[in-house]
Amino acid sequence: MALDLKNREMALKDSLYNVNRATIQEEMDARYEAELRERQLVEQELEITKRNNLLYISLALFALALISFFGIYRRQRLKQELLNKEMILKEQRAQQEMQEKIQSERLRLSRDLHDSLGAELTLISSKADSEAYVRDDASKGSFEQIGEISRNASNILRDTIWAIRKDTLDVEEFVGKLMQFIHRRQGSLNIQFVNQIKEEVQLTPSQSLNLFRVCQECIHNTIKHAKAHVMKIEMRTNKGQIEIDLADDGVGMGDKYLDGYGLNNMRERISEIGGTIVFESQSSKGTRVSVTVPKEI
Image 1 (tube, rainbow, N blue to C red):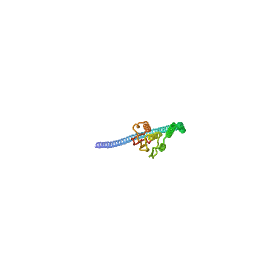
Image 2: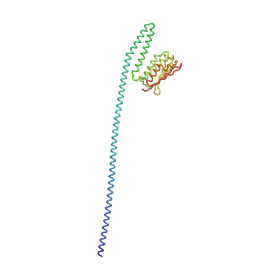
Image 3: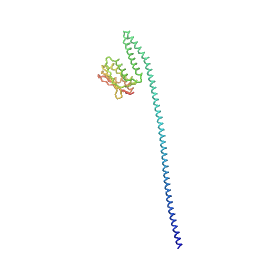
Image 4: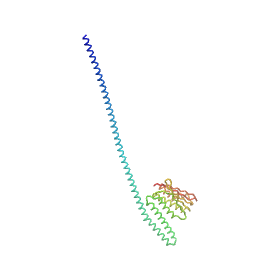
């Protein structure tokens, strides 16, 4: 009986021990699992932090590289702009120097023409007039003709000097010069000139001289060949062009004159300044010459 109780007591103690041990083991396992999960969370957070740091560093490096790239690009662009501006300034200075040299040469040439050829023509006309005055024989007419030719040549020379002395000429100045020539040529032919250009238009020396010479030639041909009573000259601008129409009421000209030296010379003059010239003529219905040149220079 006593042994049986003792065994039961021992069995009860063993059972309690085993229960306590199991409880302790469960607590230890739970604590271990909790610590393991906590460690895993910490490791995950560290991994996330590490990745974020790497991302931030990569973004920072990219931003730095981008800033550096734009900085370099901007410096290069500014450098190129400065080089371009410097090249433009050099070209402008070179063009200005060239224009100054050309203008200086124009002035020198005009002085030489005036002082040498102009003086000689004046002397010739003066001598011819003197000889014509004192003679009463057949040579009188020849000397008068020589005087007239030399004066005409002197006028042409003055017109040439006028055109080459300047870089540009206002169209009003051109019109004034043409009117002077028209007044000198007024006689049996009634020359009517209408200037419809109201805006400010500049002509180059080449434009001025070639247009003036073409107008001169047309007026000369009309006086000499057309047997006209009236000649109308109109000058205007139209769609960026300068237009000059010269029309007479003369006898017209035949086809053989359309390929003559005088008309071909006028064609070459207008072509030289980038323009066009058209001749229209009918027998007994007069002649019209239409000249068109670019307004911009």
